[in-house]
Amino acid sequence: MEEFHKVRRLPPYVFEQVNRLKASARAAGADIIDLGMGNPDLPTPQSIVDKLCEAVQDPRTHRYSSSKGIPGLRRAQAAYYARRFGVKLNADTQVVATLGSKEGFANMAQAITAPGDVILCPNPTYPIHAFGFLMAGGVIRSISVEPDESFFGPLERAVRHSIPKPLALILNYPSNPTAQVATLDFYKDVVAFAKKHDIIVLSDLAYSEIYFNDAPPPSVLEVPGAIDCTVEFTSMSKTFSMPGWRMGFAVGNERLIAALTRVKSYLDYGAFTPIQVAATQALNGDGSDIAEVRNIYKRRRDVMVESFGKAGFEVPPPAATMFAWAKIPEKFRHLGSLEFSKLLVEKADVAVAPGIGFGEQGDDYVRLALVENEHRIRQAARNIKKFLSTADETMHNVISLNAHR
Ligand SMILES: Cc1ncc(COP(=O)(O)O)c(C=O)c1O
Image (cartoon, rainbow, N blue to C red):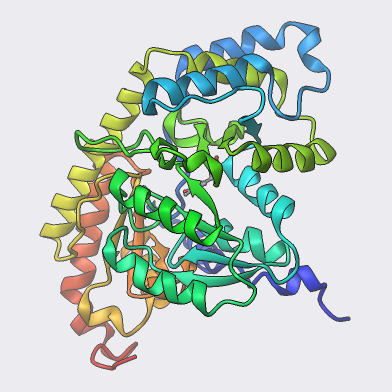
């Protein structure tokens, strides 16, 4: 029987191959240090958990909730944007709560895409950016992920040579997987470009609060007039260590928010009310929980950069996100990121995410997630050092270390 049309458009998940190896190594007793999936390991702050427990005692919270988010939650998100970015939002018409930003993004694609619509999407990038639109019948045209002047030449060409003219442009800074951060000046140029060509801007700001220097990542909505063409997605998963709770937001242009809200109203009844109540409290907090999470990731980042560097695996320090994006050591680069990632599981007991899983432009890299503690990150570095220093003797009959891709 032929595969269903939509399923055919979804290639097997690359990460699944590494996950399978990881599972069988663990079943055989190996202690795999998992820097693969971006799944925060930190517990949700106790005050947020307590609020959930309190709210769940009220039977009224057990009924269907509100698909677009309870009013207090939407007001809390609007207040966050005002406080953090100086962006004023109408909580009724410019904010919708989503079941995590991934769901919001995918349903925005459902809401706005007609078959064959062209979407400009960074490569490499977080998979839902492309696959959300592919599932909705769209066509992806890859663009650069570099947030500088080099972004615009190829972008201009992509617009000129796309038929039909692209519908939307996807941004994701701080970037997963590359950890690059955009400046407000870059966003100004993007918004001017989008307006000139009448293109929608969809910005994924999942890592708004996970940054390591004195320059918090800006929102594209800070650009005057950006709201005419822009929606931005944020997430509570990383900011408050709430990945399993599934709570995120889309904010921005009223017409786009209305389209997403409408589609969602047919699909879901919103997150469980106690989750929405607890999320409201989290957003209205004093920021100390966020600062603590940020500091933990920062210390892990520093340990990773130092210990991996000493082990002979250069890891550039990411300025934001919970990931490092590291070039595969030269001797192994010809293998490609999937084979190299498999080797790390088999020979060093370390799992990483192969760059190819984020797009063809990622194949010289692996992504290292800061989701193990400092002690385990140091252990990973020791394992990798041993692997790298013995590879010549132990692997010459397994793979060619001199070949070219
Ligand atoms: C860039 C980016 N966007 C969205 C998500 C998904 O976030 P959520 O848990 O809010 O769906 C992630 C999670 O890793 C991410 O890295």
